[in-house]
Length: 444
Image (tube, rainbow, N blue to C red):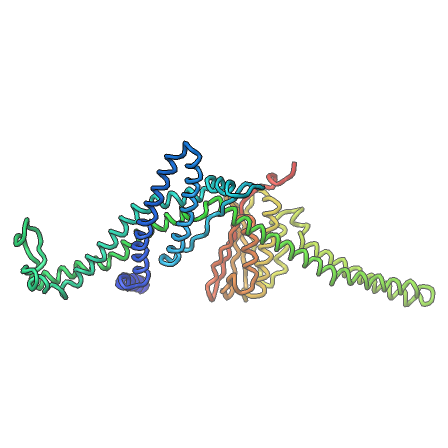
């Protein structure tokens, strides 16, 4: 009950503050400035489009049409700037014009403009914007002016009897002096209440109008969905390359500082034992015995390194046994539930394994938990992973716990990492990966 009361009180405060809030006045300014821009720009574009359409039978119409499209792209730059400034709307830049490979000059730029989907979307926005800007700005102006005019009517109603000879605002009637007038204190108060209702309602109506503008800007002035996906894939590919490079440097460092150094020391010990074999066989035997121990340590380091690259149990037996083999490394008890009909593709399998490994390490180091649960299941198109612990919570991608790296690694395969970790716990981390059967990635 208390929560409901707080919610209602918060909503009421938001409604009462809206008419004097910054966002409401910025949105109103967006409508008015949009009308100014559209009134200047759209007639020019209409004229250029009609002229270029009429001249398309000649060569002159083609470059004029390309010039019109380029002009509309410039208008789009202005409109994105207005949206960022007044609507606080983050709009990505559209894909750049790409001339054909190996070609340059004005002719290549012209054909690139004519082939550009973003240029045509910008032109469509410019054509549609004038009628919409006129209607939305007119509606906003009428609502604001009428609302504030009626709300402040008790302050200026005296103008009518003093300067017009009328007792108040005339309601109905066919001519001067006919009909009913708003002239009593009660009627003036009712008018002010109507004005108050309009003033409180207008910011939300204007917000709804700018919502349409947001759709137009995002849909026509931003990058296409395909271009956005390509851009994300390019970023993800760069992150994968960086991750692979870092892994190679780590493997090189581990080999150089670990197994390689140990093998060099082993070779020197065996050389000394060989020299002492005839002079002091007992000392040589002790040195060979020590070297044998060094060989075992070197083999263990190489096994650990190979397991860090790709564990053999994952290749041979799959995710269930591989994840079960991870649990002894975690400092808290871990329960694992897997429900997979088949094995996923090797790349998805490996990323899932390392995601679980990283998250269990985080639980050991940071969570102060007493128990953790790993659940793995399959939906028609996704591999779902959820890890829960009863620790102290507070896990984020900004506190150096490796979650940011996991987010990038999952994003490289069109995956997703969701974190719910309130202070005090519990923590639930859900990973979604695309499902591909193992046979789909098997070379033929």
